[in-house]
Structures are given as C-alpha cells and as structure tokens.
Length: 152
Image 1: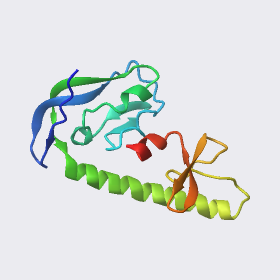
Image 2: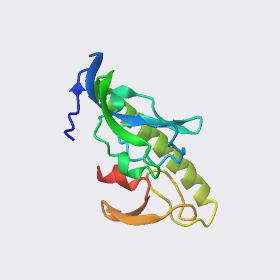
Image 3: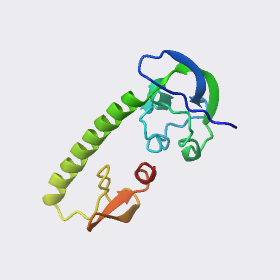
Image 4: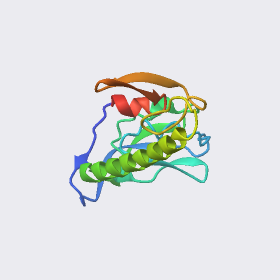
C-alpha cells in the first residue's frame, strides 16, 4: 500500500488522501491508539476511539499496530487536508496538559514516599510499566504508552 500523506496549507479544504478509519463495532475503547498518534487526531468519545480532527491525521498509520481488536485501518477518501500548523498547535496544547499533569503528580509525590513516575504523563510505577531513559545528564522514567511518542 502506497502512503501519500497530503501535507497542505491551512484552509485547503477537502482532498483525496489516506486517513485512519475506525470501525466502531470492533473498537473496545481501550485508548491504545491515542499515544502513537503524535498529531493528536484521535480521542475517546463515549467509550470509542474517533478521528475527531481529520486535518491532524497524517494517514501514516502509526496507531494501527496498537489496536488489539484490529478496528483501525487506512482508507483513501476525501477528508480535510492535513494541516502542519494545526498539528504544531495541538502538540503545544498536549505538552502543556502533560506538564500540568506531571507538576500535579510531583506536588502529590513530594507529600508522599511515592516511587518513580513517567516524566511525560505522570503515570506511576504502581499503574504502568516504566522504562528508564537518559535525558540530558539525568535519568528519567517513561511509561510504555508514552514511549512511542518519545521515539517518533
């Protein structure tokens, strides 16, 4: 399958391109597809994954392997044009939310004897597998859900 990511400028309208399709019948709402979607196009709504921002979906399919039920596929259809600028804006928003979550977790951890936590989302080692990574001159921890975003 040839993947042609339609990278166009803002306001370009609909274009015929690859985009993620989510089969609601197969989707179990696990949310595994959200983290690999570095652009932030997928959200969980009413217990099901949905491509809520077509212009953020690059159609590459990094989310496909994360789905345990096979609900995600790539289809070629008319969709809002991919918008690099909106992707950058969305990533800034996501980073701000994560930083706030990490700060809240750090504030709680200072009052407890809590162990390590994911530097990206704040998940603790009690709830998720964590992997040690070097960042600058110090070792930090990242959960397995945030790891794909770190390496993309």
